[in-house]
Image (cartoon, rainbow, N blue to C red; front, top):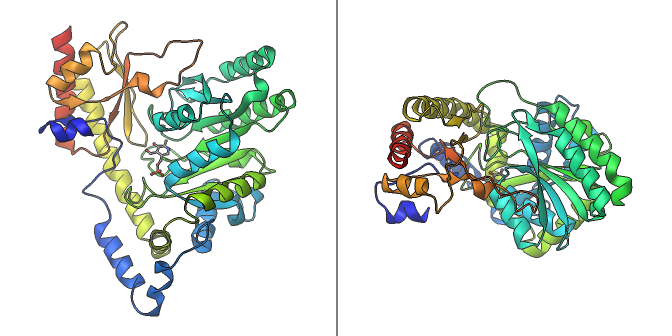
Length: 401
Ligand SMILES: Cc1ncc(COP(=O)(O)O)c(C=O)c1O
């Protein structure tokens, strides 16, 4: 972001920002205007509760149950299990605080969401990376990891498995439902040796931004007792990133602890913005906006993939996303992509930047962080910028070869 400010003309395919021109300005103005008229205008300008607006929690829980094909009365989807947070980022932070002590372990996908890795690092939590396949984590690797931790006596320090399960940041990969069910079974099998619950944190931040294929049921579907899955998501990506309304469904004891911490942070997410989202949901503005976004991101993703085909050499591989905001590209063996690499310097000279892939891998003591991948975002740039950004990357690759 800093580079984009100090270098005019730079095309950033790095930032995870969303599409600017389609932000729902008119819809938001209309909702705000209606909301603040007359006596009804007072409640949104007052404090709310720590857990968040009841109507918003009810609507959100109902929507999730519907997406998962489950009855609204199913235990996992009760609004009483839900809390609203300042972006889902706040919830990820709170979860780390209540679940982990310094020196504890969390299993993450290899690669994973780098801001979550930052939270882990700042809490002194050790990460172990689980290999990824095109349809989600490698279950054999997860099992081998759990077995290894059991043998080494480290299992009691393991607290959770964190999965970015829909159109992941950074890879765009979606975890198939069968793998979520199998991962839960494995965690459960190792609980006696761990001596406590092993939670599955499912980060579904990009679930709504699907533009191809069918939706996938969440891990909540397989957590009938509502004891093991922590589901986190957000209205940031599908409505407006500037609004930052996030939410989560949590097992009871964790919810109590999380609310206590949230009480100390801010005793409630901005009420005005919660009311805005509630009204967007009830008026239909939210659904209409999500449909617009899906069509828009489908076009931008296609433009990026086409540009990759046109401008990148055959030795580079990239993903073809079905949702989310990212293409994940892999350079040929021995070509590095990190901030100090020749490629990053050449790309900067061509006035384009990407997120170096190594930043998305946790520090795992048994392997080096892979260093030949990059995250390319089609979220914020125009189609012309996306095309030109990839063309510049192609020129940078030629230059160092
Ligand atoms: C995977 C993932 N989870 C969570 C978040 C947090 O988003 P927010 O705090 O806006 O809900 C992001 C934001 O980029 C993300 O990529």
